[in-house]
Length: 162
Image (cartoon, rainbow, N blue to C red; front, side):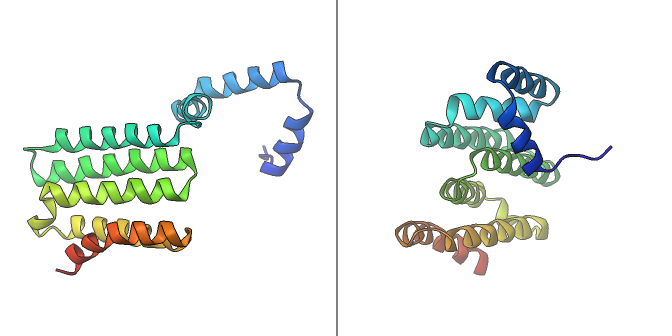
């Protein structure tokens, strides 16, 4: 079975009556947790982006709190989980400034956790990859935002160099 393209779906959805469209959305949300989470974001949280960013930061903090006292192997697994959740929320928002802010916050929490001093190549590479991603996102932003985010990223880049 061939899957329709986004453009074909867009044209077809334009012809569907509102009641049937709502039923389709509910049916779609029923089968995948991510679809339900995205629909929840779009309906309830999209108009308060800063509040949503703060709730994601709280979730990141909770993940780092749960990691305290664990061995290096479990810490790596927990870090990947935190990063996966962060990236999922970034995808939901679809906003470059929000992506930069959340990734910078993740990297700051990682540097504050003291895990980077454990001489783990995996953690160093994870940290470097996130910084590279941040720099790539920041370059595409408005000049004022670039300046603000670069000031936040500089200390993180210095950590990587040392």
